[in-house]
Image 1 (cartoon, rainbow, N blue to C red):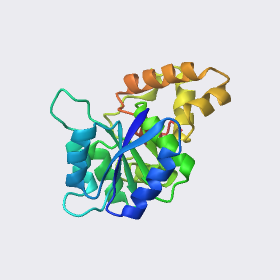
Image 2 (image 1 turned 135 degrees about the horizontal axis):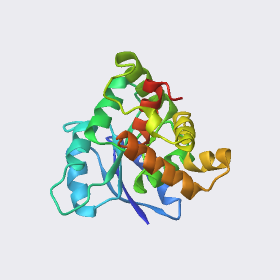
Image 3 (image 1 turned 120 degrees about the vertical axis):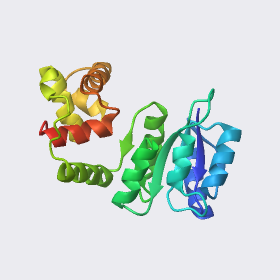
Image 4 (image 1 turned 90 degrees about the vertical axis):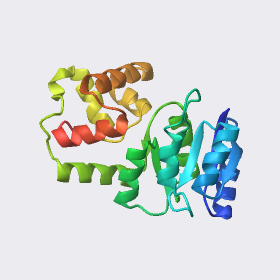
Length: 216
């Protein structure tokens, strides 16, 4: 069971998310918070796997709360954080990424998008709404189109370059497997090797890398 904490200053929003998540067989809401400081306190008490974090909350906002959640004292492992916002603005995306968020979704995301995102980040993956990914790519390509310190993509095999290109197109591992007629497990292996060879942290950074270097 994946344990989820809801952090949003609007009770109706929290109620809606709770109804969606508790309606599944594998997701369970274990706590709620109305601001960032309360989110930190509740998270310490209930140890969630995933926190759905609003950005604009009174007192400690969602970005600062994410930063604190992702840098705890040992021994506890920090929860994964998905930033949820109605504001599709660059400043929140970049700040959330720097704070250690694993996902970015708009509050108007479909029920299935929300539940799939929670499952994905609980499994160690990163997720982002398409509009968020586009903004990230546009920002980094515009400000630093091809920095010299990036590892060249020719360190990858031909198959790994194929996988990287499909990652940049926004495909999931399952979709990549279908496109290349290989198993999903093989795709996961390729993704891990791509990230290791290129010195990238996650899939979002792989998308940015692909666009910055013209590997798409």
